[in-house]
Image (cartoon, rainbow, N blue to C red):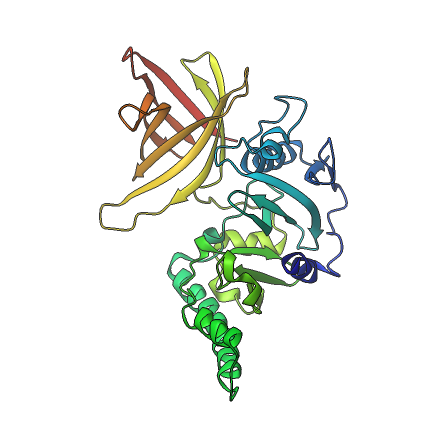
Length: 362
């Protein structure tokens, strides 16, 4: 319950955004455990479609209009990660003109139930998810990460000082000291959440305690905020235009983008790049996860990919073999990224037959 209380404190009083033609309703069928946002944006139907597609595929593993109940997988624990997911509420946050920020909270039940709060931010000019990594000049990212870490460490250290000042600490206090002394604080922009408010940006980092010790974690999630003016000199050109209300859109990264195209020139498909992991060594090889579906049958198919420069290699797995204890591939993709297009081949693993693959960013 504590998590949900904190969640509503974050968004209390923020009200509705100034984008009067952007409306949010409840995705149907709404129930007590399925309060999920559905966006209506008459001024930009493409952006509306992209936002709804991203939310439903990413959060519900549901391709829009693929069945009568978008919540079927999350409500029955049959998602790819086998969790039962409940969505309790959502809220539209007051933001600058070009931005749509939505707060959601709910509960995920795997081995044990866990409340969650999450924030998603979209560029209303394009419908693309706004990635934290795109907000800042590349040479400023580590500076911003250090600002965030410094504030979180101060919050923890101040509380530790208070705990250690007790003359006869109880066992509970000693456990708390252990939690905060061992707390992970080396957060990166890729590892924390954030949302835009009217005149500031707030970053939310995970709590110090694991699930078993959560009741002792009085600090819970760490919230760090900066006014837009404070970060002005670190913004990327993309963010300067985004916050100023400009219609000019700078190019952003590959992650969380939607692509449409065809396989073999005749089978329409849609692709969502859902996760992106930058290269961690000198190899220059990044990795990513994606989902795609044939527009006709709308069933999600997962891709595991690597990217070096403009070259993309993807494995599409068919099934997991208990006998060999490994994934059996269905296809391999080799392609080149050229601007907003991805051009290459889709090769059937069994027949070795090559089919053309042509995709373009939506």
